[in-house]
Length: 256
Ligand SMILES: NC(=O)c1ccc[n+]([C@@H]2O[C@H](COP(=O)([O-])OP(=O)(O)OC[C@H]3O[C@@H](n4cnc5c(N)ncnc54)[C@H](OP(=O)(O)O)[C@@H]3O)[C@@H](O)[C@H]2O)c1
Image (cartoon, rainbow, N blue to C red; front, side, top):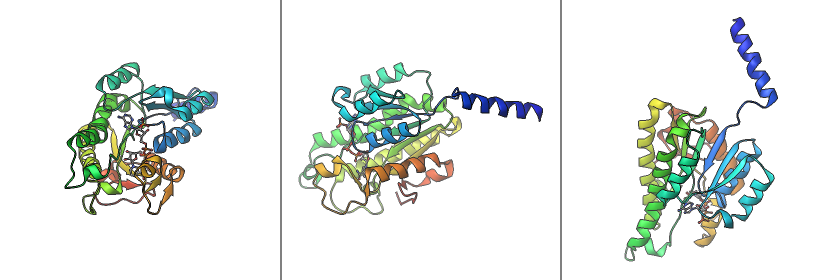
């Protein structure tokens, strides 16, 4: 009993002195949209943020965030470039990553993924980014996550990735999110022994450049800020029991 109390006093003392290590998040595609918002919100909560982007020199807002906040590190990472993944994994070898967020993704030119007009190069690009990119980054940082306190790998899917509710259009994007989900589910089951939780989350319909660039005219259900606030809460509460379905930013799950 005495020993337990001494440990608690020591932990409280370390926390008060700031010696307890802050949690670390690694985010892909954090120069804009939801990725940038994740970086801002985790930084505001005192996390160490490894904010990755394929073009650091052009990531104006992210660099401004890092200039104001010493716990934000801007790193180069193109999820389709294995050398780039390897270089970053080597740099962070042995460092723990509590939460890895596979956020980078592309929608791809919409007409080129409609039946009657299928474009193979675009297929490869969408799959390489949204599917293999998430697999390769998760593989490269799995040990960093396993070595951490929180041990969470998440990836962003979409309501469009649901096979149950699939309608016309966006064939490659929808197929990529469904395939990414399956691969991450496999990773989750293979990583369970290490205590790693793999969660699939969705931002709803969030107001970002991705939607603007393809000319989305429907109702925007949420701002990027609200979507990310919600997803951060979902990530914080992730348990192994919760990963059986994708979870929306509002905490509700939906069908695969
Ligand atoms: N917005 C929504 O309503 C919505 C809904 C469902 C799911 N999602 C998912 O949420 C994630 C973020 O979407 P968003 O709306 O924030 O889109 P966004 O504004 O288009 O941002 C996408 C991010 O991914 C990065 N990226 C693309 N290809 C990359 C690569 N090869 N390597 C590294 N980074 C790469 C982009 O970097 P560059 O600037 O260099 O291209 C950008 O930072 C995506 O996975 C998307 O599918 C979004």
